[in-house]
Length: 232
Image (cartoon, rainbow, N blue to C red; front, top):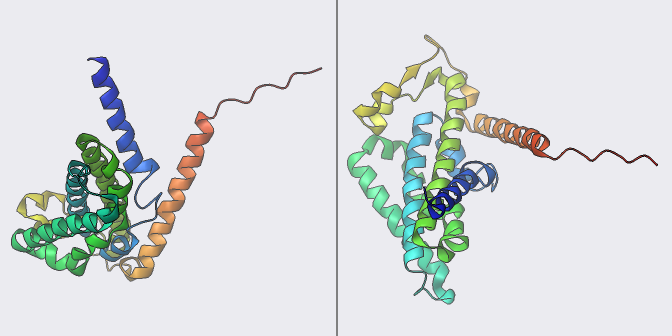
């Protein structure tokens, strides 16, 4: 492998680490909390919203990077919003046509992807200043990071709330996803709190706390050992 290829792979690795963990849309930036808390009653809903948002982030990064040379600073924000809104409209129409059950379950939160500050923020702070390949990889990394936290939060709520995991995946995502459906606790009556809004806040709080603890432990492991004191 050439030196340039190694450098490119290392750059992509840093972008993915940034998007999935260090600068995660939710766990680090605390953005997109409205759809996060609203649609994660099940892991299936979280996966559907995450995939839709990931597509918009990748495509918006591509378009913003491609046209960054001709978009003047004075109109960049309206243009970015217009591009994002066009992509979200496309996603909304495609999901309504081919994934109707998922579209019905996510409802208003698909059009509201336009207002996701993370997408506009990455377009402004990253894609508008980077070449196309880096902008697309960054959008993919941020989208994957957002999808992971959506699915994790959905699972944390769905398992104690309903005793299932990825319930109705075949209805929402298609028959090819039927293998994902699991009944973890048979004849379970459910814990209603976890699938209501208060359960979403509680679950998110524990997830954020867990990340802080892991970050602190990783920092402690990688910190250099303190130099021994020199006795006089």
